[in-house]
Image (cartoon, rainbow, N blue to C red; front, side, top):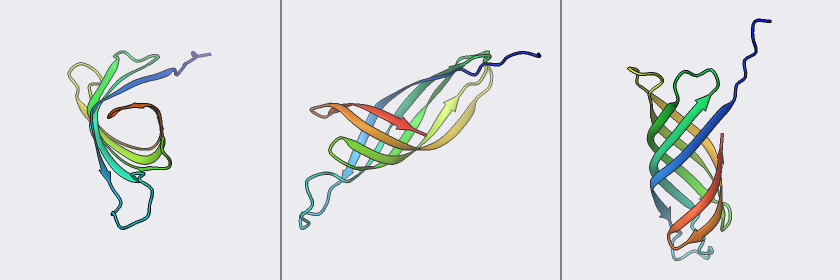
Length: 120
């Protein structure tokens, strides 16, 4: 047996400085006041680590989310990001990403929200 490789992957992500722009329906429609489509722009920071990796990578960049509310507390959308990665000292790379996003608002107060988000 040459060896056993265990791939344990952990990602911790934090979004910051998020700005959301909502597209409101026209006043002539009879739709409920739910804001259907919105664009969200913000910064992102990820701390990434896995076994057999020499360096703990940190990814920093910006993201844009286009989403549609599916109910008062749920949304589905597509997110794209451009992240700056330093895989090892002396190396730099930019990583473009995109993913589908499912979002559930857990607590909402004033203009702030605490939410759970899954993407893939």
